[in-house]
Structure formats: structure tokens, C-alpha cells
Image (cartoon, rainbow, N blue to C red; front, side):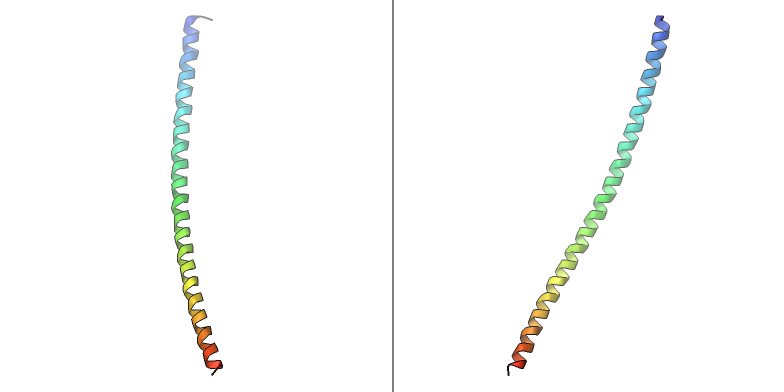
Length: 76
């Protein structure tokens, strides 16, 4: 092969490498966006679960209070 042909091959490989690098970068950006959306969704769900647990705790304590009152009335 001549030097000119080798230079053409080298140029083509560099160009292809640049395209692949660009596609990888684009893919990384898309993945970052998706992970950010998943993180936001996860945090939202987590907040809802915490609120639900707080509601359950409150209602459980109220139920216990009412049961104690009922036992007092029944023991009179």
C-alpha cells in the first residue's frame, strides 16, 4: 500500500471514531436524562409513602385511643 492509501484509511478511521464518540456522548446524555427522571419519580413515590405511613401512624394511635375509651365505658 502506498502512503496515500494509508492516510485515507487513517482519515476514515478517525472520522468513524469521531462519529462513534458522538453517538456515545449522545447516548450518555439520554441515559442521564432518564436516570434523572427516574430519580425524580422515585423521590416522589418515596415522599408519598412517607406521608401514607404518617397517616397510618396517626390513625393507629387514634384507634388505640378510642379502644381505650370503649373499654372504660364497658367496665363501668
